[in-house]
Length: 93
Image 1: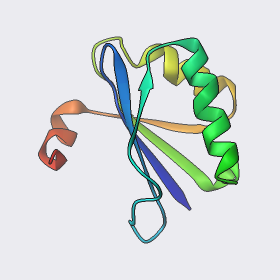
Image 2: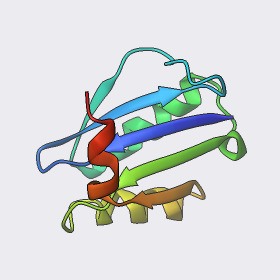
Image 3: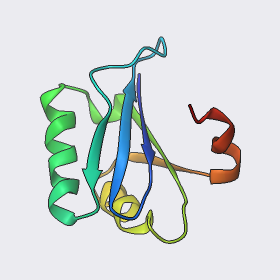
């Protein structure tokens, strides 16, 4: 199983991928808030050869900034979970 965490922000979203052992896979990367970058995220996931059924995605429900990416990923069949920013704040570095 793999876990993709997405920190939602206005200009770009910060993404971090973890494996089942909680180890980071690759480097953390930024995803601009645009439809083209959403397609690039799918390409990156495909490049890593991660099966869609083996990936859980969590993202902060920050304002309404999460809605486009959430809808995009859901439409593509990914398992996406919304996280409360007040609860995730304690995990910030």
